[in-house]
Image 1 (cartoon, rainbow, N blue to C red):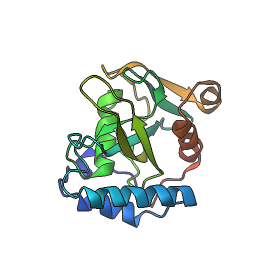
Image 2 (cartoon, one colour):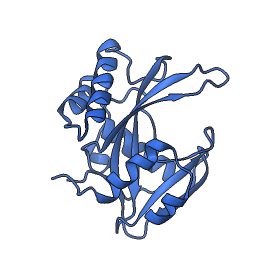
Image 3 (cartoon, rainbow, N blue to C red):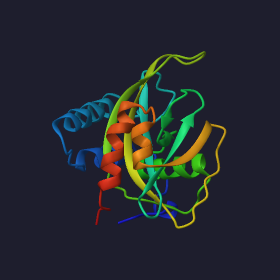
Image 4 (cartoon, one colour):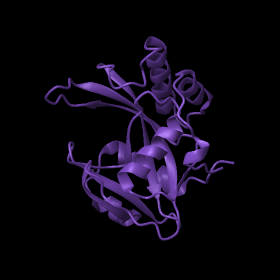
Length: 194
């Protein structure tokens, strides 16, 4: 079942994010450990785990955007990190993780005709390096499959230095973060949830 932005209004209560994570069935033991760590983080920070003002880390949500034929993936060359990544970002107080992932994908791609499968396809916890005014911290990322409509035209935002479609063979020849490399085969082969 694919959802669009109007189906995913913001939700402030962290119980929404916790319920989504708790109800998700991890496909591997490693993903089960990541889910348990994320649930423990939410429990340890019940008021602000979804706010970037929590300096030790915060929940984020990401979208692996495929074209309508599911043959190409849209990746961004992240301006601050200098790496090809999936689209996504901070929750900014919104505990509706699929809604966050879809919002971020629309903002970062310039594509409004996007639909999201609200069942996560991957969880990842990674460190963000310290920058001026921001200490090193964790991103606890929930990742979703997003599909673009036929004829979708991307438009780069200021958050990236490049934005482009890659077919699956191109992704194997491109230097990618390990977590993105792990995510791509899942996305390319995943049927949409019912």
